Image (cartoon, rainbow, N blue to C red; front, side, top):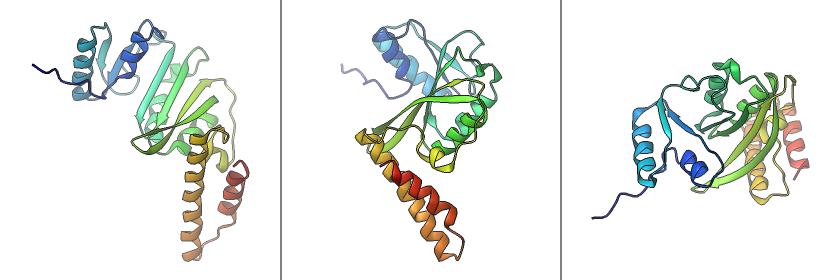
Length: 200
């Protein structure tokens, strides 16, 4: 009898344990169905990984983990999850954040709430471009410019990062065109676009 293939739900904990990167993982989701799929995946590979049902970081206790990954949702939602868990404002926690949309809103939240973006890499999945942000609380509150919020700390020497930056530039170009058509001022956005293009 053929076995069902492993689904894509919550595969990261399985990878981390199987590769010896982490000795302990908690898989958490707000919905029961992804957790059911995660439990089936975990059972198939014979690993001991705890699953918890709940919203955001409400399922995690302070000092229970030292690395937190939040992925597969918009930047605003990730920001709200961090905001609802004030205990993450501690430099002992490594945050790995993968916004599906609104990465600029997430970068802005991090900078303005004392988190430092230590590294950022671009990646692709099913032909779509995403960014993964490594952040940590530093207590240094900063106000960056809009160009930074749109492209972050991506390295334009990396081909995928360059594609991501070029995509963000096209978004700003369309915004400028739409504002021109509506008779609105474009000076601010032209300056943002020029700064984004200067790193390419």
